[in-house]
Image (cartoon, rainbow, N blue to C red; front, side, top):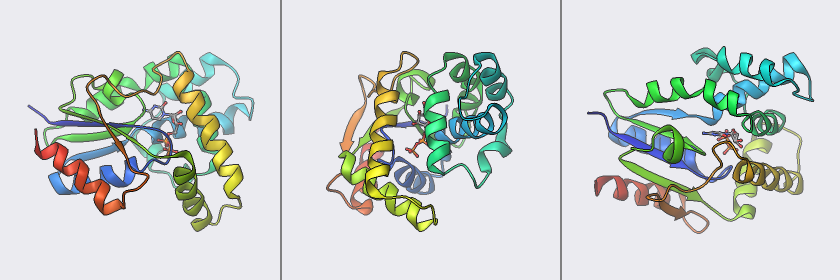
Length: 208
Ligand code: CDP
């Protein structure tokens, strides 16, 4: 039997940082499922243009995503994040990415996956389900520092606006909307340091 940890929550809430620390503590494999949607968004922008139109084209692109696509170093831009949010509303795109995620979750060493629908749709039987959140201003400040640190020209107000728009789209879409699973533990990291947030999550996993 493998052990699965599902982490969901809004943009820039600290899921990735926490998931990486937990993976290294327990020896789990880690998948940032947002990279799958970012990979589809990037390709769709390149192949279809900024309108991202054509459902069958989007599904074709999603069906062709493989491991190397999520290891590219150009997936973390603001433009790709917004494109990811838009392609993620398409049911056929989401369906095309399910097998990849479930196969990853089935690894013998145990797995931790983060995203928006891991506890609700991808791994509803996960051993531990967490929903990591923080105030929008706190999340936007983290994302602003991250983008600025990588040299992307942006400002706090734009980052906050983009983040709120994407969260609203993620929470209100019909296809696998972002929400805590009924049995998820909700953790607000607004007033926690990274160290405290990681310790809180590790304590929850050790309880199992
Ligand atoms: O890094 P950040 O938290 O900003 O976003 P991400 O995890 O890279 O996800 C980018 C976008 O992909 C999200 O805004 C969602 O629209 C979509 N996504 C999703 O729908 N389901 C997932 N399991 C993961 C991401």
